[in-house]
Image (cartoon, rainbow, N blue to C red; front, side, top):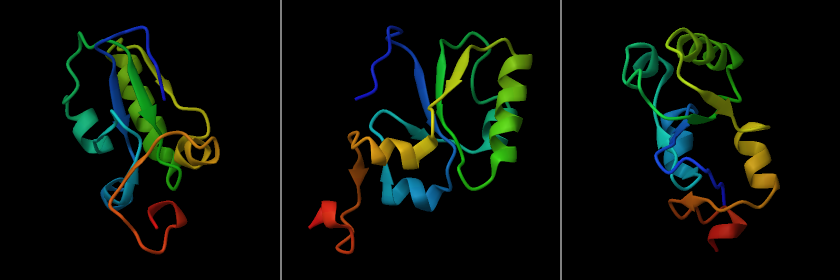
Amino acid sequence: ILRSPEENALFIDLRDPAAYQASHAPRFLSLSTEAIVAGNIPANSPKVYIMGNDVDETENSKVADHLTKQNIPFAFIKGSYAAWIDKREETITTGNPENIADQ
């Protein structure tokens, strides 16, 4: 389980909403790049941990640029969601009968 010394840290998942709905890490919220750039993260936010978009790396760059300009501290989860799964970290799924973990 991801632990953060900052109790109020934000955990954001940039992946496609359908992928998030199927399976995601606990505490992570699905938020699009557009929503972040539009200012949906307050400038006085605590640290933001980001599960990057592993399909479109440009989305990660846009978010990083925006948060840097806003002086919001952030970090990307190394390896994105695939690495999270490979490390057998906790996930929340919708119950896919094709997924061995959900059987």
